[in-house]
Every structure is written in C-alpha cells, then in structure tokens.
Figure 1: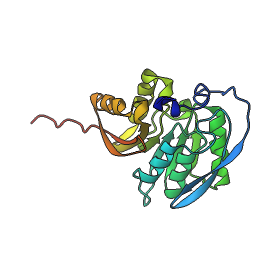
Figure 2: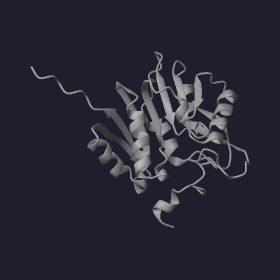
Figure 3: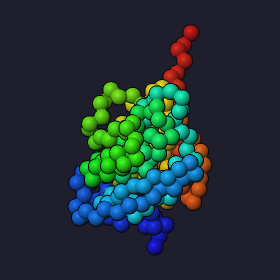
Figure 4: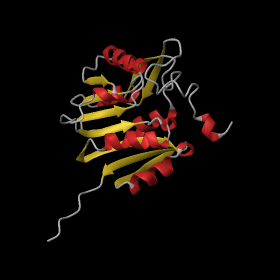
Length: 217
C-alpha cells in the first residue's frame, strides 16, 4: 500500500457526495481531548466514519483557537459529523459556529451530535445555504483533497474571500496528499500561508489574507 492510499477513505466517492449511496449503519465514536471528550454518532458514507481521523485530532490539539472572551463567527468547512465544529463550540461558547458540508447525511449527524452535546451555538448548513455576505473571523478545515485540485482551489478561495481582513484559516493536510504544493499555491495566490507545525506527516497551515498595499504618498 502506498502512503497516499493509506490515507484514502474506504469509499472516497461517497463522503463528498450530496447524497451518499452507502446504506446507513450508524455507530458511535468518542473523541478524547485533554480538555474533555465528545461522544459522536457517525455513519457510513461520511468521512472517517470509524474513528476521528489523525489529521483532525492534530488540528484540535495544536491549532490556535478563536478568542473565548468575545462573540466571533467561525466556520468548519467540510464538517462531517462534527468533531471540529463541536469542539470549537464547546471551547468558545460565545462563538457562532457554522458547520458546512455538502453531504446531507453528514449534516444531519452534525445536527444530532450538537443537540446531544447541548451546543446551541452550532449552525449546520449546506454550502449554498450560507449567506454570501457572511463574514468570518476564522474557518477551520480538514479539506476534501480528493475532490480534485481545481475544485479544492475553488472551494478554499470561496471561503478565504469571506474572511475579515484580520481573519485566518487553519487547514490540516497530509504531505502525501499535497500539503506542500497547496501551501505554495496559496502563497502564489496572494495569501500568507505559514506552516504552524508537522506531525505524523500532517502539516498544519495558517492562512491569512495578504495586507492591502499601502497607498502611494
């Protein structure tokens, strides 16, 4: 098995489909973190249904979190059944967390998991259900690399354009799935992309809009 195949989901065509074809078979996983744990219902046809994947765990362990002392709006792009969105909502109770996924089954799981965890600050939506005028203080993503490079770039650009000028994004991508080339593309596209760390082959990237050029005197 190649390194790339090792990190491929069992049914890669399903988890980023609107309506996954795999028959439903719900189960429960537990996300253990130093500051608490979450019981999460998963299902076939969603990303990493058998357990919270290593990349997501790494992001939740090491990524900078939104401020906890003021209201902010943050998004989890590609939320799946909700490990990132629910953790953000639990850690930052004043935050409004928008959990976004194209997969209807994943969205319903995320809703159910938010209710179960009594996290009322999570809003679950499909990409087209988010107001185009919505501006974000931050977004987090374990992005769906296997949708293809062009689609991935379009996806990330559409969300990066929603950031406030002082906003940021945090992405986790494995090096065998193109993290270094993605960082280079982001920088070539005018964003500031910094590697925050690396663990087990995963890169944790912080992406910020480039500052506006100073006006000429």
